[in-house]
Structures are given as structure tokens and as C-alpha cells.
Length: 285
Image (cartoon, rainbow, N blue to C red; front, side):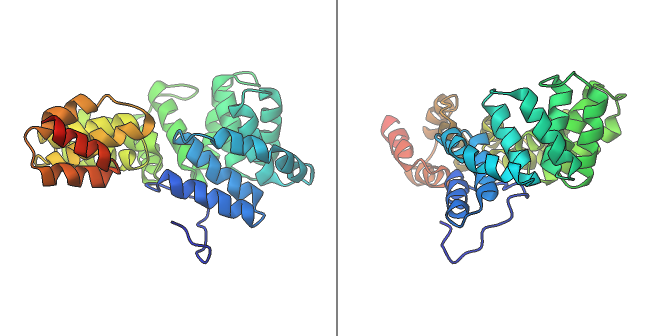
């Protein structure tokens, strides 16, 4: 738990591996101290992890963000654009806000506007313009923009296909903690037969709430792919999938629990935060 005497980390750095409860608490603390933009960005991170109630918290911030935007607060414009876009209420206005934030040098504005150009939302589709904005944001350290740029290099969307640039920006995005980038890097390394390295990226993605990566990690720990078999870690990730309401790993956990000791199952439950489900696994053997 974040205590009142602790400093809240900078929201501009992706909070890789930070529990959703801590993300929400950071947002609440920022808001209590009058930092509306900081609060909103922490809520955005929690919303990306599927945390209930975050859209409502963000909607409640709109009047204050509107006031800040009217005062030419470029960070507020970028955040407000994202909130409007997520609500699918006015993509044209979202594009305008992103553009104003981008022109003020705000990384999130560049990335947001790039996304709109990339997909033709609120503006005419223009992947070349999108990649220019993604590149500017990525060079300034934005992991999401780097991931988007990497995907476009792979798909040859608005740019010539380039495997080296794909890997360069994909790895950069993964190193910034972006879950989708970490998972895709895991897939890419696995296809190259680099299973041990691939697993490390799957785990990094899983730690930030990427459910498909959790399932891959669970299977690989079970099947000793890229690592010695570790049933505790396998069941840990199968159970952690429940955090997002995904029960696809439950059958795998039940099967594997039949070969494990009570202590091992309880440790998997502790690591996943699903102690009650671990006890159910013990009873079902």
C-alpha cells in the first residue's frame, strides 16, 4: 500500500508489474492532492488492466480536465482527448485535443494523434503521418508509440517492411514495460527458438496483466519449455488469469494440482493472490 508519506512515482513511466490496487491508490492520492492530470493517468493505467470503475472515475474528472484544457494545459488536453476517445463520444474533438497537445510537445498527444491517423478515427487515415508521430514519441521514450511503430514496420503499414526496425522498436517498447510489446517479443523470440529469453518476456507481460501471456507462462512452466518444470509457477499463472475473469487456465490448474503437494498448491495460491482457489484445488484432488 502506498502511504501518505510516500512520494507518488511519475505517471509518465509505464508502471510495469505494479498491482492494480496500487495504481488506483496512486490515482486517489494524486486527486486528493489536487493533481487531476496525474490522477487521471493512473486511472488510465488501471483501466487498461480491466479494473472495474475506472471509466466512471475518469468521467468524473472531465469537468476539471475541461477547465485545465481551457487554460491551455497541454497534459490535460492529451488526457481529455484519451478519455473522450475511450468513451467513443467525439473522436473529432479528441483528434483536435491530441493535435494541440502534440504541437505543445506532449508525448501522449503525439501518440494519441498517431493512433487516430493510423486507424482513420476522427481524421482521414494517414499511416505515414501516424508513423512520423509514433517515431517522434518513441524517440522521446514512449513505449506504446514504439510498439505501434514496430507493428507497422512488421505489417508494412505506411512504411516499408523492415525486420530490423521491427525488432528495434519492439524491444524498446518491451523494455519500457508495455505488456503487448513484451508478449509479442516473447512470440518473436519463441519463433526463433530462443525459448528461455522468450519466457522472460512472457512473464514480464504476465506481471503487468497480459492474460494470454499468463497462459503461455503457465504452460511453459508446466511443460519445461525454456525452463525446468516448475508446477508452482505454472499454477500461479493459471490462477492469476482469474484476475481478468478468464477461467481458461482452471482446468490446467486442476490437472496439474493432482501431481503437487498441498504446500506447493498453497504457495501457488499465495503468489497469485488466489489462496481460496488454491484450497479448492486441494479439495478437488
